[in-house]
Image (tube, rainbow, N blue to C red):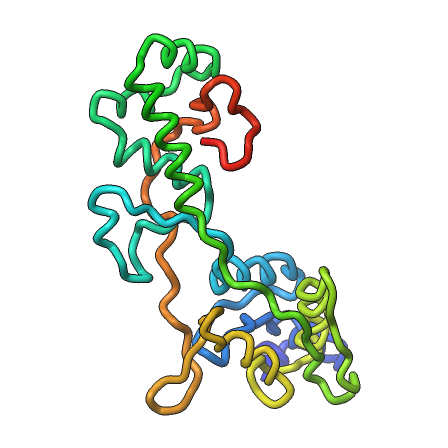
Length: 243
């Protein structure tokens, strides 16, 4: 119930108050995610699902001590290529090179000029570029088809390249209208996809309820601010997977 309704004198005011209290719940509230968003924060709500619950392309470090971190919650996983590159320079570069990598001069010509006269730096850049390509893994794919769970919609189907965006936008309107949460009757396709071993967003607990699997702790290293694109050897700038 709206806690402020006693202060209002019209049904319109009460309805407005109730709407202000309504929130967009996370898609995976039924599995334990308590994140909520204002009704006007559709984009933030959608980004939350993809960023927090669906692992996109990621980079796993297997250098040095990172090779011993085989648990899915380790800190050797990165969801951004540049973060992984910074980690390599900060953690695994030869000690003599770390100060240089941490305080890049700001001009690509300067760092390349230094590399030309520093074989160790040039070799490290080439080696790190190779590590970056080898460390990339593809995350889980989005579902190929989804149905609206609301009976009044008569199983409106979503497919194609814009499936997820259109599905989330459509369901958000139902949530704004007072729909309680995801995961119940009508959400079988969402649950089936999210619980698939290749996706593994949710899993059954011992009691039979759905729970979130522990998400990887990605990108939590405190990175030094040097631009890894500045470390491109000449002739590699703009290449795929460049360092």
